[in-house]
Length: 240
Image (cartoon, rainbow, N blue to C red):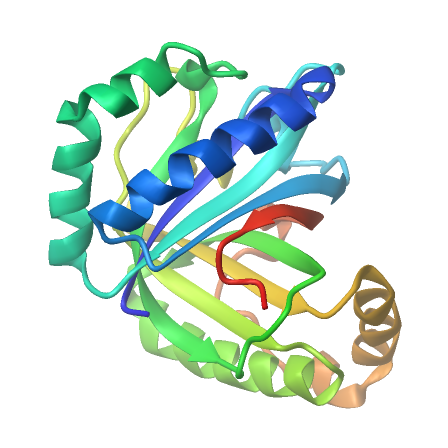
């Protein structure tokens, strides 16, 4: 996996099945355009934050649930070509006219992985994370991510991905930069951790937070602006 399109959106809770069905119906088209894996994950443990959080990122209402989603491509060229097809294909236009959520508040962007650790496999739960990292700390963040990933894998994570913002547009209502209150000279990182189950994730987090090695890791970014939450996959073309 060499390129990621990341998405965060707010979907009315009542439209969960309609949203899942729309994703499933659109998946064959996305695969035709070059998407290797398509994941849609429903907000399950998404806390309110003091400075930033997922709900604020997409201006979610009390009746809405945050969805964390991504496409995996073999490279950016394939992704760019796919986006052109998505915008011009009449089949996609018809699907777009029947969206079960407010597309104007969806945030999206292209990201280049700087870390992809683990063998993957069936995923029953995931942690989704957004971070604003100073551009001059990219190498430090990569080292931090590698040490972080080693701990997560030791305690049961099946895969850890950190992807560096590469094509992250400004939005009129919402965008990734606003989600983490990114400042000039900072880049947004789109990250996730795949777990075999919610129970495995809960058990692992307790051990990770108690591990002295975790306390020794120095964050090369402002931790107060990190956006994070737990999500349950409702559609995953790569699960198996």
